[in-house]
Length: 419
Image (cartoon, rainbow, N blue to C red; front, top):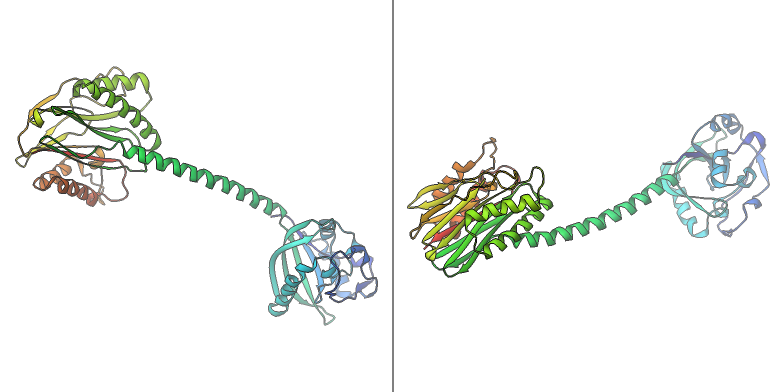
């Protein structure tokens, strides 16, 4: 906010106060120098206050109830670019244009009605510039028995410049925010396309669920039917959240599809992806985990491998068998090459394989207790007799019921059933 300007006429150098009335017909371009020259005696009480008012940092303007200037200080004179002689005896209609007079009269009426007023307007400079200002007025009763308005004028030019700069900055930020939201919406659609798809292949049915912690995340899954004789399926969890994780996940996804098109077996797939990330996307603190399965003989035979991933769960006759990772996390340490060891499992009708990311297990309740693999296993066992879609929803609902607070990690869940 700019300096406050007190409008005070130096009555020590003048022996009279102008006598004037509001002239509503005065043209807006009346020269300031043509102020009335007839003056009556200056009130003694103003002479006594002048030395005090001139020392104030604020500007003070004393006018009569017809809006005629009675007293103004040097600071106001500087603000307006006038001389003292040009300000004496001026009425509002000789300073402000006609279109502004109704507003000034309303402010005058407010002062008479309330005894005070405060409003934002402008102070006209001699050269025509409009200086934004705050006007604070109050009715005062002089010792001479007459009423006057004591008006404090605060120059707010600096504040207005800052406000304009802020408006311009906010407009730029809002525009950029809209652009970012549009970009994130597109990225979210792309990321959603990486979620595993539900399908039926020979005697195998696949049901999937995916929910990112933010608009985009680092999980992805692939259900890849090579032919009537071969189906590949996997779930991957890239460390971190947000844009960076999504970009890395997209790159690993592309390389994974390339390997699957070559019919790479699960154990070799993990090793090749580990080497690819170390040679192409090496970054401190970055890693990913993966669980991959391959189904042959119309789904009756499964090859399974995992690295650093939560244990998959194989449900058979209501019993749950955990298929644990046989290698550590991928991509973090160049020398930590994952094992190509795999599970070879024969399946029978009714068997179900549950793959998931740790977003389903690393959730906490109001007592800060983690659901964990054991808790998820209970949800799997309790819903194993339901249809595939009902089982999926039951597990998701169970995790949601356990969780206290917002989603902290991406959720990916894939359930495979041999019919």
